[in-house]
Image 1 (tube, one colour):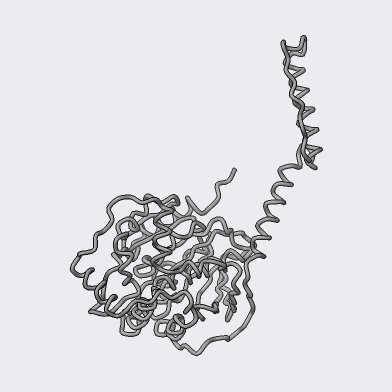
Image 2 (cartoon, rainbow, N blue to C red; image 1 turned 90 degrees about the vertical axis):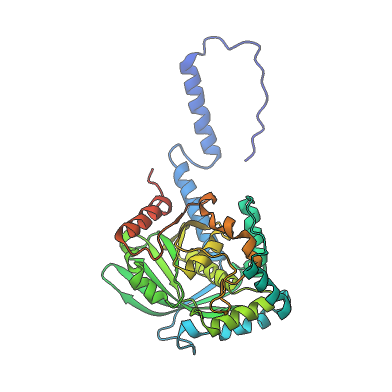
Length: 374
């Protein structure tokens, strides 16, 4: 209801109104405005909370995700570390967005990187400009566009009830990148709980991250943790084949890993047991490199823990890597400067195996992912 207040100008203060008169006048106006707003003197806060809760629920329902129980469901790929079919098909699925280059041009980019003839940008571009550069050079703008509206299917293939948390094995299925697995651990209860997305390194898996990088400790600290199984991550000929194929078609391997991370974020935002405003990201080794790019390009990531960095120009024994992205090389120093980001981020020792490092990580997430009690 819009109220058009008349403008009244007094040439002198009204006589004998006094402080008490001003107090009761203000009280009357506040109660009257509360009635016009549809709430009493003590109900406006509850009404605001109901509206906020309703908005959050509407946001969750807007996400196009089909989640279903499917005990025993699997796909033909025996091991996530060696499954590459979906990636080999990607250039055909995304052909209209391809920006192909010749083998000669790609070879020249690699030679220039080795000869260090490409200048690394040492001036500071803004966070927004950096995000634009990353998205453009990964060529993932079309994947990000309409991500919430694009159907994502998630099957819960198994559940295991531990003493202090629930473990779910998940199978994601996306029209562009196909199928990949993940493990979700969450405390018992309705929440909403803060959550962390975890990306493992080369030669590892979600199970290894859970056991060797303290993934199973997160529920005891009040967090849900979603650990992705990243495919074709063995620093071998298979990874090289995919990375080179994608580069020749104007795509990048890290671009697809970045997109899979966004799919996992979308899934967590859909769960009513998750606090979608407090979702963090942690990576190890190669997973940290993917996480770096996700941190800069996705503002829904509320806090980030990193333990590795790259120049995006490396080759492994003359093999292409998922991190071989020549166009990103000029921005590598700026990408590494996570302390200048608008959201909290820290660099920890590689592998974070010592207890003091683990304590540092949980203290960091506690400070930035757990809402302060009023």
